[in-house]
Length: 123
Image (cartoon, rainbow, N blue to C red; front, side, top):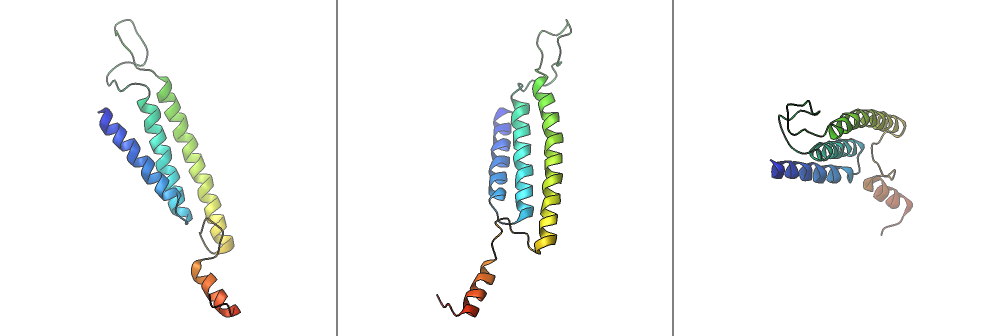
């Protein structure tokens, strides 16, 4: 079980980092979402993977699960949802104002080449 969870966290982290390095806004937003899911799984796994144990000792159970990571994950889900909504609103606003969804704020390579040819620079 622990190996499967570690593979899932690693895959989500790698996919999130790959998408965050793209030059368009939508893959960056998806990458941030994948990375937040990986962090949520990591926080959840930090509280011991013990299914069926109560979160609070009630006198009958000999062991318990730590409830703090569960509370942290619930808080992180709400924060990541709000962060995604804000970034999505900013991306839509940037696309509406500039007509392009590039993250680097630079012109596309085709525009740069066309502009250099129009100016007479054949390099």
